[in-house]
Image (tube, rainbow, N blue to C red; front, side):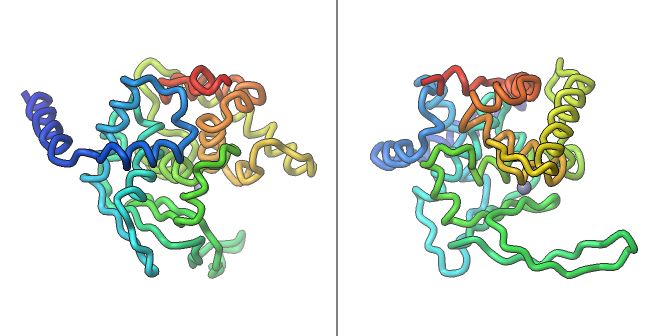
Length: 256
Ligand SMILES: [Zn+2]
């Protein structure tokens, strides 16, 4: 009964907020990571993006004039990882704040003696445990370059990770997935990757992944959706866990 009501309500929202076909094609052309999705998958993503845009508050700040196409570009990338999971994976928060360019953030970090240090960092994005997501538009708009970097996917994977507490590289797994298999795949890969970074090796995957397990899954998820063959080759166990978790295999559609 409840599902039925929700479906009726969602249908009403989708019908009342159609995406103009020209806008849709324009935004699609800017997102090569969506190449290879079937028509049914694209239709599903389009519906999800409409609901996502209606459910979230998009706020442009610092003089940024937010357009419908900008929101759509963000929504399509944000919804790709949850295409087969459902929009409820982004429940419980509303705001998506967009700055014109990489921004400064003040953070307090405690050292080994418990002394607080005020740090000022240049950041392109942030995901807040009890809030929303902050994105820099200049980096968000880089989505057209397929290089294994995708700011939107990165920040939204943090939100998935935070669904069961703080970001720790261990999101709530799907039914049937093994926590032991996830831990084994990720701890092995993280140890190997951190070791390479500490030894000063060049890595094809962004070395920011060695920061902590939360950044490891955010960065390797970017690679999963942008350069799946690279991840499948480097860390096949991690790749296999993502196929199960995200319920999709980008290496099938981006094979060429
Ligand atoms: Zn991050």
